[in-house]
Image (cartoon, rainbow, N blue to C red):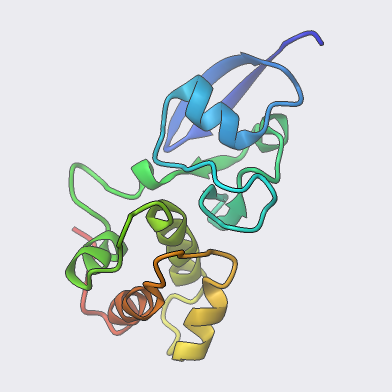
Length: 161
């Protein structure tokens, strides 16, 4: 199959890639752009390790072709920090010990970030937080500390910059 030239905007930077049109977004991000924070887990849309944000919406990057993401704003876990400063959710994950082996952490951070953007200014319940990350699997069962971290950001304990 003939390769195609596409431009992906990832973390505010445009990347021109010659890729097979059947290349998954997770492959483009990891193998062609070199951002390895996005993990490749199950390849069946089950685990959430590959979660990124497309136009601020949580998307499993193993479920979309790279060509489908052209013209959209893609954010990976590397794009959460600004000017060397961790985002509020990244700080909260660190402070709450919301990681064990760390494999699910990038996807969880991206799902949590999308959830926080979608619910900004709202008073959300623990149940709503759990629903917001339900597409992400933590094999180490760190869900309680992850939920605590998200709750702490919702409550305003962490601010940008």
